[in-house]
Length: 326
Image (tube, rainbow, N blue to C red; front, side, top):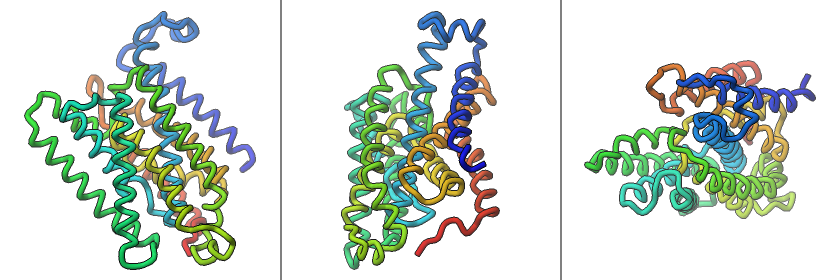
């Protein structure tokens, strides 16, 4: 059964895409005909298709980002939000939007988000290694502190601003694909490809790093360099995703865990499966977010938590020895 699992994941993603395209507040007449005739239906081609492609890209980016976080820290609890990466991206993007430097979802916002994510991750990395050799435990603790600080600053900034769009910016910061357009897909595609390529390159070293820093060092792995490269991939992926659609909780933690439970520890294979699972989870969450409370739209982060938490708990209860932290 396990050998068929990759095919099952791909099929589930395709089914999720079809569901996301066909369901919504507005019913699309002759759906299949509209789908095979580009431009024939404005709602389908101008709103839903860009949104679905964005969900696929963002889900894949966050799935791989979570895998990089867990691999770099060799810690099952690591994810972009815990390491401060997501908060750094939100901080840079939201400040840029509030000061009128960039627009939400623009290439400039994606660039600012990636820079902010890199800055926050580097800050976490630096602070965690000030008094001793870098450890995964120190990275997690410092990352939580950095994340909390930057999140608080973003919250204060959006609360104090009197602009009319401040409320919508706050909503976007909790996760929303509602502002996605065709133009946003270029930047999202670029960061997913670049970050995914870096992740693919560092994956074999992460396999050895999972054996522990000392063992990896004796096997010829430059532990510090490996962590830095993995955290760069993490920052690019999470930074670009968060700056485009806001902070989406739990996805970066759940997708790699589900992939690891099913497929084992090999990081290159996990990159593909974490991307597929992340895309599927985000598509399902976004479809639910825009349909279950019509005409209102729920923050996606809330839905991803509701979808992912029971799955992760069930997998942990069933196979609680899959992850071994040295």
